[in-house]
Amino acid sequence: MALADDRIHALLLPVSDRYLLVPSALVAEITVVNALTPVPLSPPWLLGAMAWRSRPVALCDLGRFWGPAATMGPKSRAVVFYPLPGRLPTEFFAVLTNAEPQSRTIEAPSVLLTDEDAVHPHLAVSLDIDERRAGIPDIASLKELFYDAIAAPGG
Amino acid sequence: MTDLRHYLELRFAGQTFLMPNVSDISVEPRENMQIERTGRAAALRMVQGDSWLAYALGPDWLPLPGSDWTRAVFLGIGASPPVGLLVDDLKLLPAGTLRIEPFTPLGPAPVPGRHLFPAAAVGRGTLTLVMAPEGLAAYLRSLGGDHGLGG
Image 1: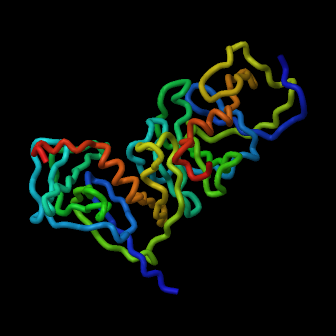
Image 2: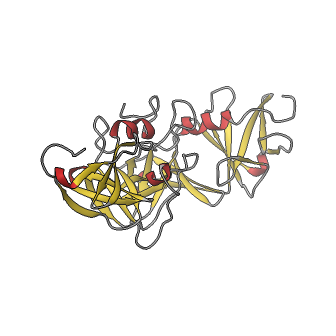
Image 3: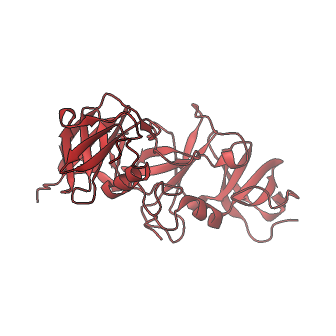
């Protein structure tokens, strides 16, 4: 099945054994991880907090939901995302990637939905892009994962 | 305008944290504490017949039977009873020397309804988490009051 609609500017984020396909407009910056401060009593997918533009940003290993846990290496990057819809303007977060993300202009004929059934946790859909297995993150699912319904200040 | 607030810089288990120096905190030196050996608390202070339990935490924030702690930081003075964190070292830092920014830890809160680290001090490439005193007190109380002395 081909995706309908126009072309979009997107980034392919190498995460675990596949790529995350995200619109470029969601990404504030791609940066290296210089230092990471562990956050005690946090889930294993929260790697820690890093300083980014004079603010603390949580760094996540989303790849462990569909593959092996991430290992930090010289090629690793932190992709800093703008706050999710409905969250506080300070709530940037970052996703660890295996390497530098790749920029793509995605056009409908180049993207095929796979027959991989509703796929993996926190992915809305799986795709094949240039013969690469990719997934589009499920934003609503990520919000549920990230933000404690009672404790989170952003509601 | 000069910022007169202060933060406590607390070191334990090889980690450093900050905490606002609010009015319901009390710091006791080790010599004012009794060593507690039988429960999850590592020390206690007897105050007017009440035992104030204090916990030594490891790097994973689980209670340790003991450590090289030098002071107990009691939270919720005025509550019944206060609860303490044992620290290896403690400093008082003026708030004006720190850049404190809000932080939202991701994932479920360790104590229902309360995140422990609502802010962080950001320096040049460095980051120190700021603990919420109420959240920390709730977490320490969740560790249990079995101090083995029957009190």
